[in-house]
Image (tube, rainbow, N blue to C red; front, side):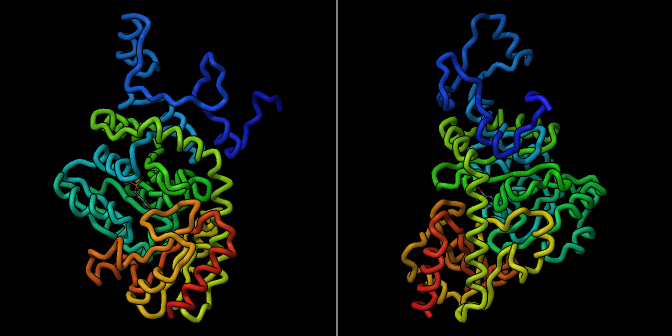
Length: 395
Ligand SMILES: *Cc1c(COP(=O)(O)O)cnc(C)c1O
C-alpha cells in the first residue's frame, strides 16, 4: 500500500487535522480572531456570496478554527458533515428548531440533562411541538409511543446522571422503520467510546464543554450526521447566531488531540474506582456501565469500547447523608461541571435536580442519596482514598 492510500488511525488524525498552514509556516494552528474575511476584488466577493467558492465570509457562519473542530469531531464520529456552536445546549436547541415544525412530535428519554428537559417541556410547546417521554429502562414501550407525526427520537446513552444505557442498534432500526430521525446526545461516551452513527443514528449532538475540552475551560457544542440534516441546522444557526467563538474552538481543537488518551485513562480509573467501591458498607449500590452488575452491562459492552469517566452510587442515609458526604471530601471538587481533569462529586437531589418534585426525581432515576462522580486524571488511588475517607467520616 502506498503512503497515499494508507489511512491513518483516528487517534493520529485527531492530532494532525488542521486548518491550512499560512505562509508563516507555523506549526500550531493560528487563532483566527476575526469577525469577517476580505476579498481581493469585487468578482471574488460576488462569487463567494453566490456560493461559488469556499471562501470564508463572516464568523457567524464559519471560521477556520471552528472548522478545524468540526472536521476532527466528524472524523472521530465517522460523520460526513457537522456543525459547531457556542454550547451543548445551543447545539441541541438548533437540532430541534431546524428540524421540527409546529404539529410535529418529539419522543425523548425521561432521564435527561436538566436544561434539555427545560427545552422540551417549556419551550417546544410554545412553538406547537408536542413531546412524550419514554423510560430508557423499558425499551419495549417505545414503539407504542411513536405517532404518525413523530419526527425525532432524542436519547442520551449513557444517561445523566443515572448512567442508563439503551441499545442504539436496536433503537436505530426502530427509528428507521418509522422514518423518524434518531438524535443521540453522546456527551458521556464521546466518539472515542461510542459511535452512534455507525449503529443507526442520524444525528449526534455533543456538549464539547465536558470530556471534549476535558479541562473545565471553554463551552462548546458539536452536531454531526447526515449532510441534509446538518445543512438545515447550519442554515438555522447562520441566521440565529449561536456561533462558537474562534478562541474556544482553538482551545477545543487542542483538547481533541488528547481526547483518545484521556478517555482511556478516565475509563480505566472509573472502572477501578467503581469496582473497589462496590460492596462498601456505606453504600446501597454502585452503578457504572462496565460493572457486570449494571442492568444493561451486556449492551454497554456491545456498543461502547470503554465505560466512560462517570460512575454513581447511592449512600445509605438519603439526602442529609449526601450533603455530609460532600462536606467530608478533601480532594474532589464540588462543582456543577463534569468531564474535567479534576475529579468532581455532585449530589443531584440537593442541587441540579432540587427544583423537581420527589416523584419527578424518582422518575428520572434520582434517588435521595445519589452521588455522581466524574473521574479525573489524578492518580486513581488518591481519588479512591478521598471517597473512602469521606464515606467513613460522614457515616
Ligand atoms: C452538559 C450537558 C449538556 C449541555 O451542554 P453545555 O455545553 O453545558 O451547554 C447536554 N447534555 C449533557 C448530557 C450534558 O452533560
